[in-house]
Length: 348
Image 1 (cartoon, helix red, strand yellow):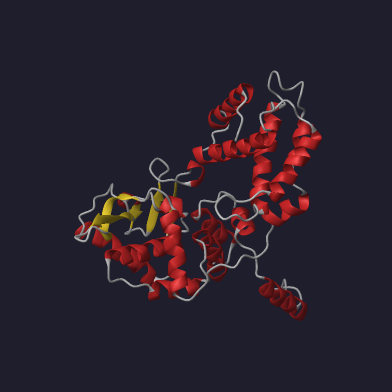
Image 2: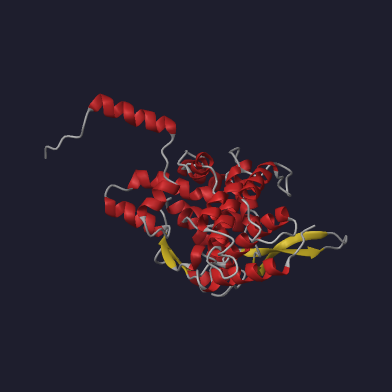
């Protein structure tokens, strides 16, 4: 059981306020930092943050490597461990400048919470990740059933994710007014849409073809004409569950409210790929698919910049360093071609 020390509670609260008001972090990021600090507090077992010792930091890292995930009982992944250590390191770097702590903790002390470089590079590295190809995405959408309103909603959700590159958290908070079908774009207004870092931006539809766009057109028309949804209603409404005659709950349609969390969208996405006989990809991998598609369409630096900006990336390198890794097989193929054909000619 976690033992709370008053000094720890006060300084942690001060730090979380600093993250919000001075650093401008979103609530999710602040909650994640608070969770990481609580993990370290459990290891301290009631000791003050000021009671720092290098061996204590090293012991904490060893503890993390053997700690179990509460949900599935497996060891914590290296990426999770590294994320916790980054949060603790940032916290102790801040502590080293606080009255009552800077005489006990130094910036070099905070460095003991660094992850080892090998695991950090591995978790942030550019290894190719299996992800849906554009052809697989279209195949899944063609195979999805559309007999019920829920099935049509689910298909429209997957079409929307591929057309816009939206994160599932943003997709479930989109309202009808944010979708401009005439201009083939979506306005991600951070005042109402849960965008990463609270950014507002406009995304035009990616070129997945008229058939995929038509799925979204048909869904919007159904919401407006059949279900009488207005501009402030959700694009992807929650499932309506009601008690039937046999006293059992059953799905009966859609409600005029959005999902509370993106978990339902994730399940729908994975289930659609599984039903099509494909791996159960995560919806976040849609962005890797979009970079594959970029290689088919983009020819100039301006093309790549526009494509990247459409995903809301300020720097085009973010798109290609995070999502654009070339598969090993393709890498070998290209290098073989380079050796065979030689350098590009400068002749006009």
